[in-house]
Image 1 (cartoon, one colour):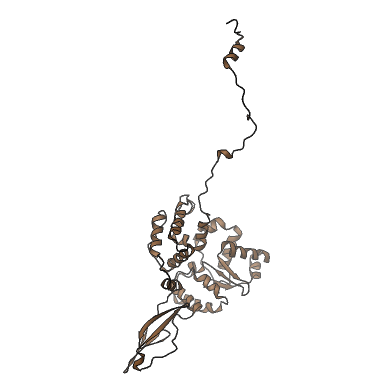
Image 2 (cartoon, helix red, strand yellow; image 1 turned 135 degrees about the vertical axis):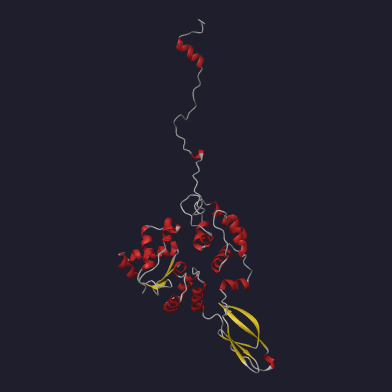
Length: 344
């Protein structure tokens, strides 16, 4: 059990926390991040009775809070059967470093998780490639599988196909006299055998799908953002995390670059997101491409709120609402002065 957990001060500057979290939500979320049962991987087992006892809430209140965080805030998942909870952005802030003690801790905690879907949920937010690979290996198994047939020394077996299996996608390569056994390659010759150990490049499911389907225009989407959202920081580096978010957005908009451009235009028009209101200046490409934030932008949560006053909508009362009598002001003046037309 860890003695402490890191909480970044930007927690209080997050727009979701500022706008959508009630005081009770903030306390509950801090409890989920710092209670004694938290782990290094962001998935841990906790009973609702334990939450109720430590926070002084009723079971009904705990059920309501968990439901709110799962369905409304969409930042946790809870498995009622295994009583395990997963925090969505845990890996983004707590799995940045990948030293040996952290790797050993992660490797010891992963087998204790009963619901692997919760690990996949946390994996999406991990930006450190080395830790992401540890999660991938545990969830999906070895990237390279052992071939069932060995290579004969006969001349008929000069070439064969070696298969690399990446999350269900098969990619075949031509090799000469090669026998694959996990990550070791054995070169077969008549006179000698040379053992050469190589590191297998891990292929993510996103990259594999790019090979099998149409290529995703990563660079073009980044240029669209830089040219449209001129008030936000420009995208200069295209890393693996951004590739994942771009692919998710590209799929969401059904491969329509025009729809993505309109999405960026909506962001640029928002005084809140661009910081023109002065309330918040934390918006960026990574923030708007995050699924939960992207949906909020599309739903108009950050659109400018203008109050339009329509004159025709004003209520008309009965005061002075009748045809006015017409007067001859010259005749009135003569009558007031006591003049008669006959004398004149």
